[in-house]
Amino acid sequence: MKQAIKLFSLLLIIALSTGCKKKTIGLNEEFELDFSKTVTVKADGKKFKIRFAKLVEETRCAPDVECIWAGEVAVRIELDHTELHDIGFHSQYPSSIVYKDRTIKLLEVNYKDGSYNKEEDYSIRLKVE
Figure (cartoon, rainbow, N blue to C red):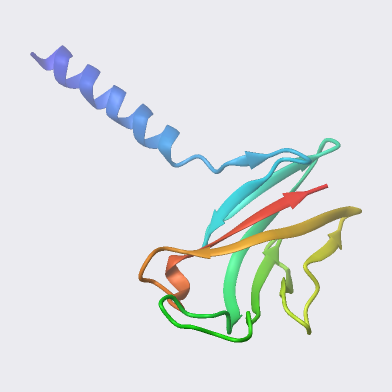
């Protein structure tokens, strides 16, 4: 019985540590990043981190509302825990930036149904080239 408990405990520790690993993304790979989450990008043997830090502005048409203007959206990303950049589909912000000789492109800004303008329910889709 003790061996079964030890085995179960070991398997549980392995499962928990595997589930906590951060995702690593390669070049030209589209990926989704939830609010406040971080991914590691591996490019040419070098790595850097991207974190979705903030919903800067959301003026797109809210669900179930008829709008005559599509609106704009901008988000803030944090790079390597040191640099902050605002990107978006917006007249004041670019939709891509260059960092460490790589272009980071914003492809989409999404939110869960019923969570319009709730920062914690947003995700972004990015691609690093």
